Image (cartoon, rainbow, N blue to C red; front, top):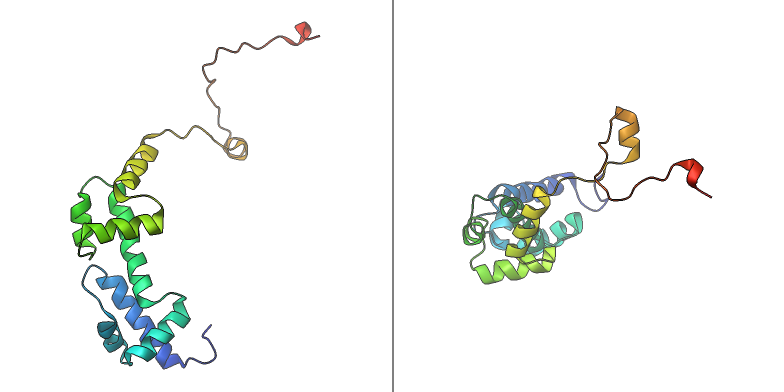
Length: 153
């Protein structure tokens, strides 16, 4: 549903600029380029983009880059410097600072946590899942021995 005060053709122009960000986030993108893509003035474009997406164009671009960095950091194919350069950040310092601000962990720490999480076996299976699929859970190794009911007083 479109906001009442934004005409459909103008809305489509803003969406076109957002799609441009989605497809070209690894390239240098500035407000001038985006407003040209939308065929609107920079001021008008910035105001409408922020109104529609509840983020400024710069915030949206940064989040898009950080989300892609998260995907690549969880893999093992690229160094942090390669990821930084490939997603469009000019320096590893600005990338690391923004990544930590958005995610709560530095890129290296996030990579370590993602790899550790991937290697951990899933030890908890909800009871409803076990019941639904008729799974048998192997007995866990434990030093606790069950007391027969007749011995409980």
